[in-house]
Image 1: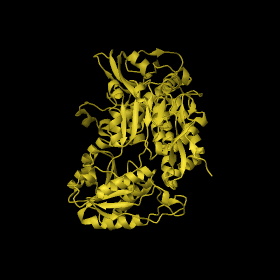
Image 2: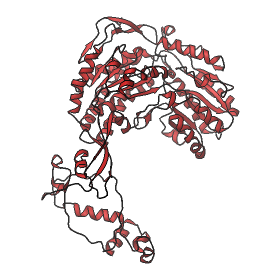
Image 3: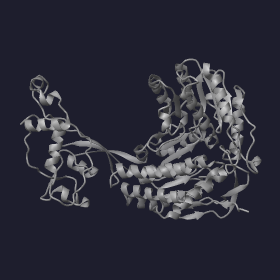
Image 4: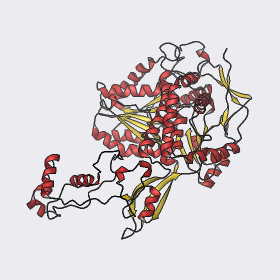
Amino acid sequence: MTVPKLLQSHAAGRWVGQQPAKALRSAINGKVVAHLPEESPDFAEMVAHARGVGLRHLLQSHFQDRARTLKALAAYLMEHKEQLYAASTPTGATRSDSWIDVEGGIGTLFAYASIGGKDLPSSNVMHEGPAIRLGADNHFVGSHVLVPRCGLALHINAFNFPIWGLLEKFAPSFLAGMPCIVKPASSTSYVAEAAVRLIVQSGLLPEGCLQLVIGPTGDLFERLAEPDVVTFTGSADTALQLKAHPNLLRRSIPFNAEADSLNCAILAPDVRPDDAEFELFIKEVAREMTAKAGQKCTAIRRVIVPAALADAVGEALVARLRKTVVGDPAAEGVRMGALASHAQQADVADKVARLAQSCETLLQGPVDLRGEGVQAGAFFAPTLLRCRDPLGNADVHQVEAFGPVSTLLPYGDFDEALHLATLGRGSLVGTLVTKTPALAAQAVPSFAAWHGRLLVLDREAAKESTGHGSPLPKLKHGGPGRAGGGEELGGLRAVKHYLQRCAVQGSPTMLGAVTGEYQRGGAVIESEVHPFRRHFEDVVVGQSLLTHRRTVGEADIVAFGGLSGDYFYMHFDAVAAAESAFGQRIAHGYFVLSAAAGLFVSPAPGPVLANYGMESLRFITPVAIG
């Protein structure tokens, strides 16, 4: 007989919790799998540990160091992923559901390791250039830099993705140099705790940069200060309560919310039942209803279809959903598991009952559950409703049943469909299924104002589409209004959320020293040693090389035109060029660049620095023959 696990917080470098309190039950069979601890950690000690130990260690490193650590951590977790899958089993998730959580989270670590390695400097100053000339003679310039905030990040996560939610917030925070205090939702905190234990066990993270709170947050919010950041994922109501905390308001502490929203999918009026796009639409809606048992903040809640196709869509969805096998994910053939908790089951039932008062029920259980002991589980049958008057029914745009539940909404014309999409008052994501590019272009201005992300799905995109409900590390995750008004992910944008932006003004020399990038007009350092002959650690901003001269001749232009195939008239037609704004033939811009590169190289054999590109290259001044 398996003994229920006693969960513990990880605070100030040790595991806290000796006495069991509230029991957490398996979503599959109702058996106790873990207990929350009776004890709360010392929040004053946690905050002091984050600031005094974690922050100090992080700021002794730089972006590149931290990117390498993220990559190593991702590799370690991938090696031990089966432990995380096992920990996720009592949540009722299928293997494919847990894949999103486990390997999706680890993949996010890999993604931010790559972003940091490719796009961030070997320092703790990120330059947001280019520099702006503030004086007529270029003695006074300005630009923006981003630096670590020198605070801590408090992450409050939802129950549905306890690993992905943990890692997708941690990765950019750590890369930005912020120690993290993580608070998972209690109902699935046994999964988050298992992940943090693995991370601590790896020994890869500096002490103090990741701490875990199991249970309530106590007075933690009162202990936050101006440099700190709070990020939240969960319900819109809870987000509102936390966002209004007096200490956050008093100290102007940034609060980023990603809240559940009434996301939609629109079937455009150009799609017919015999089109491939019609089948894509049915598959997408059914998948979003049943994946993770519909417990995704991105799940499709409103299915917006042409009135003439409402019956056909309803029949196709019902037929597909009826094939969904529900039960213990360990049982053969099961494709949808349980809701995460019995409390969640009761909440979904209550919301469905409210929606059913004004909507027609097209499909709702009971279902024949597979597996042993599942009658005591937190299962909920796929449920499809239909609203006859979506413009006059407020509930379908306000009430969210956070489970395998969607409502069919018929529309008259396409403008009405777009209007219905906005009635959710802000959503994380919407999908438009269409064959017509013009309809996609028409939809975006309306959609983008009320949605954080838009998937335009057709048969071509379907070949590689990751789907409506899959946030990707390189694209923003978040949305306006009810969806929280915040942003997560989005590639480098997420790292910038945890950095402080500052405008810097001064001479080009001073700005070059601050940014680590030479600024035009700054002081140069002349040396007998060719820059290519220096070791990387010996290179100093401002080191220069005065090359030999080269006069551009007609033969250069002719030869380059032959090599490149660029016979533009400004390079070859003296009569036409004379009538242009330049008044004469000019050299190819890329020839000038190539000639400069040739002058700059050191041709002798031996080790050299690598040149991997030039940024902000512009052809500003024409170069004429001679």
